[in-house]
Length: 501
Ligand code: SF4
Image 1 (cartoon, rainbow, N blue to C red):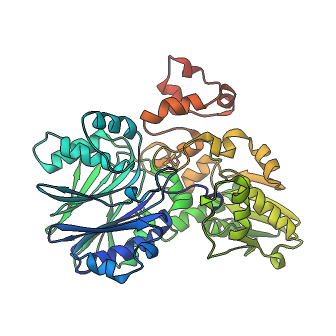
Image 2 (cartoon, rainbow, N blue to C red; image 1 turned 90 degrees about the vertical axis):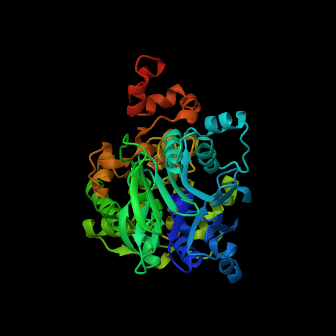
Image 3 (cartoon, helix red, strand yellow; image 1 turned 45 degrees about the vertical axis):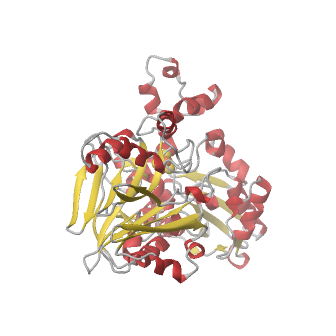
């Protein structure tokens, strides 16, 4: 939890194994380690000597596979699986992956983590040409493109299809003879290859899943790469050289598990450095540091060490509460905070506390947390956020797609402080974030996507662009300080004149 207690969500985790006698069971355990990336649906497809068998359903993995016989039925030594978060309107079981496609020349399964920015137009074009879709997920689009390609070999068809889709994607494909992973040209989402002691290869959204199944990391899959795993081992191919690393910084801030490593950077350590940097940038005279559990625990320990303040448990999380994001109204959402978190009166009473959270999304939860701590007797509540203000929507696989959902798009830091009722409020700087993560890649922002914070989208927004630009009222544009991409992209037209703060 946090990202203001789960108001933003990752949209999926993927896992696959090639060459293990109990592949479906192993995939189950791999997906279990990735459950934080999606809790609304899950599925596994196994490959039994070229025949693909699948089971999918709504809910947590443990609910979908509540009967041991479901795993036993998925025979074969290869399998791929998926856990998903359902965005509004797409929660039906038709959208649960992996999808199985049965063709005259063999079966294929496919699952996907991310979001295609040109999906709407591609799908419209494909439908006009006679394609029939069984879901409203953008995952199916890739398979239609593969099958409609006139290139001679499967790999050529796949490469052509991967060059046609835009946006953020990590695909996992299983054919009769191979498991294939592919990453978008910016590598927005992580994807890692591991090897087990029996020689089986594993592909997973995060390295924590490799650890769970006892696989050693072989390498991270890089932007524009295709990895093909078959009975002869693995080999890496490319479908494009037009790449530039821009991995989602929210993976480091909030989404990924602290025990995962992304491009060699441990997530817990990165969060700890963010907390330490925050303490340097925004110190406060206080008695203790407390974290909003769980994703801020690492940053709180960094802040506390750097500030020389005790790190106390001033907020505790109820482990068994239902997820509140399914509650539709603001009122219910606010109630939900109390179901999820409690202030520890005996710890915070009479104390000046620094509360560390990873982000502020809507602000309503932060307001509740401050209120809860004050009701528990805290003398002062100082909010410190271990990332910059979230001002812009994401189009690469996170479910915030309008600025209306983001309080920092509307209000200044001081106005947010006033709204949440904190005694002080500060955010980590963008430089502080980039340097704390420390990927150090030879790419803008050291190889990170920071579009959530500054609107500098690493790619064109395609189908989303017109609506996004229209959604920005002139007065909002005045307040929005950055827009590097749009400034250069729209030079010479009406958007050139975006006023600067
Ligand atoms: S816009 Fe934000 S959430 Fe989306 S990929 Fe970029 S940093 Fe991640």
